[in-house]
Image (cartoon, rainbow, N blue to C red; front, top):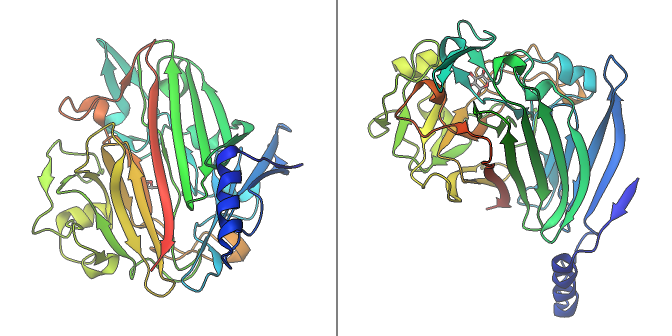
Length: 381
Ligand code: GLA
């Protein structure tokens, strides 16, 4: 099924280009294409939605885990390349342990000792990362089938995904209805809008776990990427990667990315925090205000010239350098993904916030609507 939509904004943009007589006329109509991707063991159909914007950039999103399975961006010579790691099949996604491209919930990152208190009640969660809960438990949102609906917005092709998480699922209270809208805008942005409501007080922290390699998925490692993170502080962790509660200045540490710095420049320094993470696997406290859209990070890859900017309404960024990749997973096209084959920039509230009274709250109450937005914007230099 292929459906092209003609939203007012898109149309007027096309006319401006046509009238100005420029050579770089649009490569095509923005579209959303849906096709079957596979079946779950119980027969549930999984679909692939391919969003194409006017410049020809494409994003593939599957209803299993709401995962971004492909994302093509032009390099400095205009050649499109897939910049996210992933698998070739549904079974590949069901078996790999790295959360490639997936939506993460109900609680992104870790909750210490797999427990938290809310309104006087103690909740116990599955332990799937030593003594802690990681990425929502053993059956997090990344392993669920989402309902999808094609959307056409004035900004570009879009798909809306919905998942209803039952009261008590993975130990969390409240029936949570989560919605995620992926839009591939005509400004070459992958925009992700998360919203949720609950029928009982709960905690949540939704994010996306795409692994980026701006040289192209499967091309070497991430060490030459130049990273800027607009954060003067980060949250140090213990051996289990649970924040100690301290908000520490990055100045004078290998965590200072306030100026563009290659990932590889300091990753092997003798630093206890880098040892705990086997590299970078930490939450940066963004300088921008919580709840307000602003720039979080920028990454530049010199051989391709690709630039990725990250903008978000969230207060934190988990910068993870693929330290658990070890070559054992063969991804798209059968290519093995080595140690540090890519990096993640998971926009979020801080890890373990339900147990950290000084961190911004992750509570959601009935009657409130959770709403966060993150944009990954692509260009070249
Ligand atoms: C997050 C965590 C990492 C790791 C990855 C998935 O980024 O912080 O420690 O668990 O997810 O492998």
